[in-house]
Amino acid sequence: MAWFHSLCFALVFSALSNGGSATTRVIHPPRYLDTLLPNGNFELSPKKSNLNKTVIIGKYSLPKWEISGLVEYISGGPQPGGFYFAVPRGVHAVRLGNEASISQNVRVKRGSIYSLTFGTTRTCAQDEMLRVSVPGQSSDLPIQTLYSSSGGDTYAWAFKATSDVVKVMFHNPGIQEDPTCGPLLDAVAIKEMLPLKYTKGEFLYELGSLIGYF
Image (cartoon, rainbow, N blue to C red):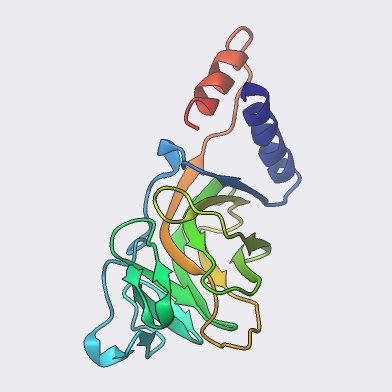
């Protein structure tokens, strides 16, 4: 297991050092990544007047977020049609329909490396994908049907900040027969990742400490 985590960190920092972004899927997010974005767990709900059943009406109706397209505000538990949505954290989450997206401007340090973590699951039988992006960097993540004990798989996506404010966006690029089909998203967090520094005799200790968070 130790060699696997060492390889993961090596791949992440190798990609970022070349100006790219890196993605990895983890079961338990490291403690040092667990800093929720404003309303990152979606427990601040839209006003009832801005909801048509579960569909959010209005570009700025979801507190702290900007939405585009068909975005639903979901409560965990049994759903119409016999479905059951397990929410990773708290009670509520959002569901991104065809070509829908949510975004938020986040203040960061230019040149620093950050990691986003979030819980997501697919909600229909069709293949689903989630595109995560900041300006100039993006990744398309195929959403699996696996579930952890908290109800959703946890992903981590790393990027290098190229400005003091970045627009973090989650987008469903899929076109499904049912326009509401799309990934469920919850527990969005961000944290600056301090670079590994080599000090003779201490490098392995520092790397081991990082790996110990998994």
